[in-house]
Length: 195
Image 1 (spheres, helix red, strand yellow):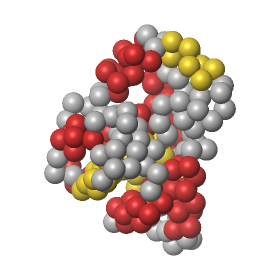
Image 2 (image 1 turned 120 degrees about the horizontal axis):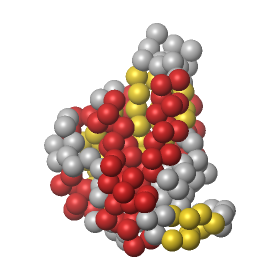
Image 3 (image 1 turned 135 degrees about the vertical axis):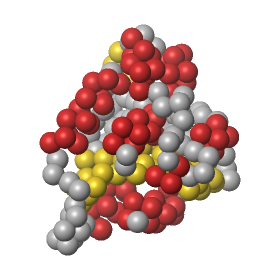
């Protein structure tokens, strides 16, 4: 019986406690059965992009699975592109930062996490680490599902739509960077993951 490893990657300054991560995890765990085992992996990512990917890739290598699917939000969507290209797996990108080095360069310095006010240092060398992970273009659009909000106040939805040309796309009128209506669109995500 084929087993699936589902990796969820949260956004910049976020955590596994984000609402999208939590409700996606609950939906995935509800899908899992003895005949359809699914392992849910949603780690706290680190300030260093390289250390974050090392952590995730170690888990991928150590996990016993037949199928890998990655879901990423914002910066997590950028990481999902890297992993999908490296492992040839499916990826769901939720308002992804397709050009994260450019987007995050202005944020170098001391920051806090959104849900804990925990301080962390986002160092200049982390932009170089992001550059090393940059996917210039996706090789197989059918592996990708994009959810992009026209009302995203941080990232340009048009850039996302262009980047995932040929992929399955759900472009939302309005909404916001966090995708406030995510619960109502979650069935589409689950459907794509399940195919």
